Length: 507
Image (cartoon, rainbow, N blue to C red; front, top):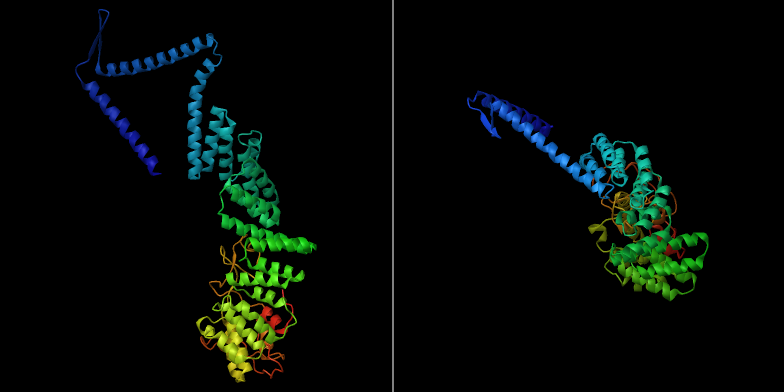
């Protein structure tokens, strides 16, 4: 808007200046005398100006005529395209001007202007490899997806523009949500340009979403070979895909292949918890407990996790709580100060009915980082040591509103998942799930209601109104009758309960 106003203002100033100049020249008393071949010509000031303009126009015509003459002479000498090039030169200039203006219109978001400039460029240039892309982008910007698709299909006919056409159609299908067709187009685009990073990323995302783990591993390998992905990241992601391949094979019932794939995935990335668990389960199934122990110890050293503890318990499912506590000392010793190690040690001591040892193992964890699991363990300890029911109820009330602790959380969208997966269920991010505590504490535990009878006894509880001990908020429930339990099962989460009972952990 401002630039248009400036141009109009400059035009008015120029017209005014020319008018004033013409008036000044007309008011001059003297003229111009020109002598040609003994003949004298007299011009007034205004006539002189007009004569100069006419002379410049005549000179321009003469130059054009000379250029046409030269082109004609070249044509006579055998240059068949000399005359056509002479006439096409002006058309090319107009065409390239329209092409440049159309690109500027695309950049500024003016779809209709870009379409008109693209049509003008196509008219003057006659070079579809240049103008078709501009026409397609202009049609997309103007919201005419059908015309854009038609133009992209034209680009497929030319080897020079085939990749552009395939990529354009791929992006259209992605916008439409047709991921199956987009995957096929991405594969074609990758075959045409294997080093195109954007196409590689789209292809990998679509392969992961569709469960094509073998194809995704090939894409990861290509990115690593081309230096587009750090080697350690490529190794980790290949392990993620190998693990998912193993899960698929297990679902199909081919346990040998699954075992080999799981072990390979664990060797590629020992800190990948699901891979370590699956590899350990494979060794257990093959009656190789020493190998399973070695895998789990290495993974626990990298990052303690309840699933690793469950797999470690499955190595000797028939052992007593005391035997289990002794065997787990080797695992806990790898990361004795880790929160998961302290919680696990407390649970194992509770299972062995050594409540003072459980309290020592837990330490001040329930104060420095109170989580539902830690507070529930405290309730179990208090119950085991014979504390009043009011004390136990206080710990349980705090547990129901406390943070859930570490969970599988997406680093991209912060979505929380109950189980690990290679792709986030919410945003579709690949390899974005990490075991950590969400910013908001996460969603309630799935067994929040079930864990209370496990700790305080088998009979059900009666809900009545109660307030939060810290915030005075009405929690809406109270446990008015908590009968004595014959045996105390202090482990709040399903994995730990299974370990205490010497059973297979819940999945």
